[in-house]
Image (cartoon, rainbow, N blue to C red; front, side, top):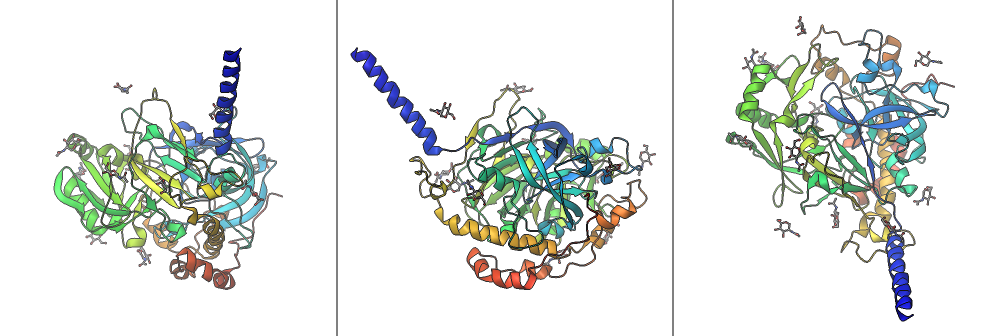
Length: 528
Ligand SMILES: *[C@@H]1O[C@H](CO)[C@@H](O)[C@H](O)[C@H]1NC(C)=O
Ligand SMILES: *[C@@H]1O[C@H](CO)[C@@H](O)[C@H](O)[C@H]1NC(C)=O
Ligand SMILES: *[C@@H]1O[C@H](CO)[C@@H](O)[C@H](O)[C@H]1NC(C)=O
Ligand SMILES: *[C@@H]1O[C@H](CO)[C@@H](O)[C@H](O)[C@H]1NC(C)=O
Ligand SMILES: *[C@@H]1O[C@H](CO)[C@@H](O)[C@H](O)[C@H]1NC(C)=O
Ligand SMILES: *[C@@H]1O[C@H](CO)[C@@H](O)[C@H](O)[C@H]1NC(C)=O
Ligand SMILES: *[C@@H]1O[C@H](CO)[C@@H](O)[C@H](O)[C@H]1NC(C)=O
Ligand SMILES: *[C@@H]1O[C@H](CO)[C@@H](O)[C@H](O)[C@H]1NC(C)=O
Ligand SMILES: *[C@@H]1O[C@H](CO)[C@@H](O)[C@H](O)[C@H]1NC(C)=O
Ligand SMILES: *[C@@H]1O[C@H](CO)[C@@H](O)[C@H](O)[C@H]1NC(C)=O
Ligand SMILES: *[C@@H]1O[C@H](CO)[C@@H](O)[C@H](O)[C@H]1NC(C)=O
C-alpha cells in the first residue's frame, strides 16, 4: 500500500515537474524547414527550400534572404518564350497570381533592396498578400495567411527568396506596418522566439550537403559551437555587421586582408565583396585573373584543375571588433568553386565568387561564405553568432535546440529558472517597438526612394557579354517588373540616418514628416 502510494505520489510529482517544465517554457519547438533537395540558381548551385503559396497551393523553391521581410516568387512573366523550355523549373517554379483565389493585390513597388542597391542590384516586384505554407503538406509545418508576397520577373535575381527578417514592411502608410513571416510565426506562437539559424550547405562538399534553415532555434549537428557573440550593429538594416579582422590562406604567407574591415552578412547575394587590395592579394595568391568584360573572376578548366591540386583554403578571422576575440571560418577551395549558368552566361562557366568593392558600404559576405559559416540570429536579444559549418552525413540526425526569448518577453509566464544569466531585457520592450517603427520607417523610405545605380549595373552585369542569348523580359513587363528606375533621391539621407536606437527614436517624427509618404512605382494592373 505504501509502495503504491509512494509511486502515485512520485508519479504525480514527476508529472507535475514535467508539465511544469513544459508549461514554464510554454513555448513551441523550433521549426526546421526541410531543404527542397534541389540545387538551383544561375550562380550556384544552391540548396533551396520548398514553400507553397496561394490557394490552391503552388509549390516554389526559394533561397533564404537574411535581410528581407517578404517572400519573393517568380511570376510567369519571368519566363519568356525566348528562354529555355524548362525556365520555370530552373527558376524554382512560377507562381501564377491568377490561379490563386486568396491573392490580394497591392501594387508594383521597387524591391526592398537597401543594402544590395549599393552593389548595383535593383528590381521591381508586384506586391500582394497570399497564403504561405512552409514546406510541403503533411509535414506539420505552418500555413500562414495574408503574408507579403513579391512577384518578380527580373533576372537580377533568378530564384525567388524567402525573407526571414522579422522587420515589417509598410507600403503606403508608415503607421501600417505589414508583418513579416518571422514575426507572424512568433506572434502565432509557432516558434519559441524571433530567431533563426542558417547555413547554405555545399554542392561541392563530399558528401554533398543541403542547407539548413531553422526558425526559433538551431541544429547543433550543423556547426562547431563557439562562445563569441556579436551584437547587432546600430543600423538595423545592416544589423549583421561583424568585423573581418584578417583573411589568410595556407598557400601564401601574405595575408589576403591585412587591414580589418566591417562586412555585412547577406544571403541574398552570392559573392564576397572585399576591398580592391584584398582582391589583388587573392589574385596573387591563387593566380586568379579578373575578367574585365564580365567583371568577375572566371576560372577555366585547366586553372580549376590546378586549384583543385593545390587545394588551398582561406581562413576568415571574424570578431565583434577589429581586435580581440575572433572566430576562424575556414573556407576550402570547393566553396569558391561556383558555376555561372544560363542566363548569366551562354555556356556554363566556373567563377570564383569574389567581387571588388569600391568602399566600405560594399563589403559583403554573401551566400558563398555561408556555405562554410553557420549563422544564428536572435532578434529578441539583438545578437548573433557565426560558427564553422559542419556537413554531417544524412545518417546523422538533427539535434534541434530551442532559442528561448529573454525572460521578460515571456508574456505572463514565469521566466524559466534555467534562463541564460544576465539575459538582455534591454533589447525588447523599447527595442522591439522602436525596431518596428524604425523598420517601417526604413521600409517606407526604401520603397519611397528610387534605387540608383541601375543603369551602371545593367551595363556592368558581370555576365552580360553583350551578344549573348539572355532572354529579354517582355517590353511591357520590363517597364513594370524589370524596370530600371533612373534616380534614387534621398539615398544619402537614408544612409546618414541617426542609427543608434535611442537617436532613432528621437528622429522618427522628423523622418516621417519628411519622407513619410511612400509612392508607388506604378499603378498596378491589378488582378481584380
Ligand atoms: C514535455 O515536452 C516534451 C518534449 O517537448 C514532451 O515529450 C513531453 O511529453 C512533454 N510533457 C508534458 C507533461 O507535456
Ligand atoms: C494567368 O496569367 C498568365 C500570365 O501571368 C496568363 O498567361 C494566363 O493566360 C492567365 N490565366 C488565366 C486563366 O487568366
Ligand atoms: C499578435 O499580434 C496581435 C496584434 O498585433 C497582438 O494583439 C497579440 O498580442 C500578438 N500575440 C502575441 C502572442 O504576440
Ligand atoms: C571561450 O572559449 C575559449 C576557448 O575555448 C575559452 O578560453 C574561454 O574561456 C571561453 N570563454 C567563455 C566565456 O566561456
Ligand atoms: C592547404 O590545406 C589543404 C587542406 O588541409 C591541403 O590539402 C593543402 O595541401 C594545403 N596547401 C598548402 C600549400 O599547404
Ligand atoms: C586559364 O586561366 C588562367 C588563369 O586565369 C590563365 O592564366 C590561362 O591562360 C587560362 N587558360 C586558358 C586556356 O584560357
Ligand atoms: C581592365 O580595365 C581596367 C580599367 O578599366 C584597365 O585599366 C585594364 O587595363 C583593363 N585590363 C584589360 C586586360 O583589359
Ligand atoms: C558556347 O559553346 C559552344 C559550343 O562549345 C560554342 O560554339 C559557343 O561559341 C560558346 N559560346 C560562348 C559565348 O562562349
Ligand atoms: C561606394 O561605391 C559605390 C559604387 O562605386 C558608389 O555608388 C557609392 O556611392 C559609394 N558610396 C560611398 C559612401 O562612397
Ligand atoms: C545572445 O546573448 C545571450 C546572452 O548573453 C547569449 O546567451 C546568447 O548565446 C547570444 N546569442 C547568440 C546567437 O550569440
Ligand atoms: C560519412 O559519409 C562518408 C562518405 O559517404 C563516409 O566515408 C563516412 O564514413 C561517413 N561518416 C559517418 C560518420 O557516417
